[in-house]
Image (cartoon, rainbow, N blue to C red):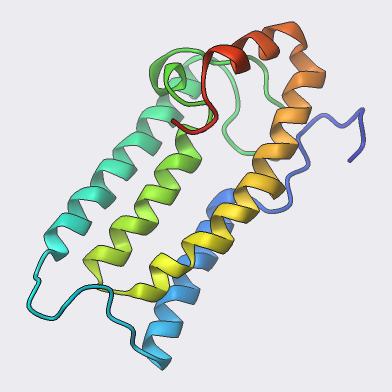
Length: 156
């Protein structure tokens, strides 16, 4: 990664990675159905609730970062360290919401493949996105970011 880069130069745009994980999980389930839950357990509604809560977390994070005057897309420069809203509790509320959304979909669709897609998606986000973003933010904001990183956990 170029130390003078104006962005984090992430491996993949996170929404694209999330979409690929969902499509892969649905396609694999179409080819080889793997139920996640016992047949007599009808809790698909719980998955829908988890998905809606995850979507709300993502929306809250996007509104918060936008109101702070920074950019959401990873291919644009970060203009400020946001420490309000969900960023008080986690440094990565959008990615956390994406992970929870995948879990919600797995439960709602009773699809073990979607849950299994959580592993490669989480690894790509952690090492191909978050690690690069953290290095970028430390270069760009120095002590301001280091202090924030000490106060707020990466995930929860």
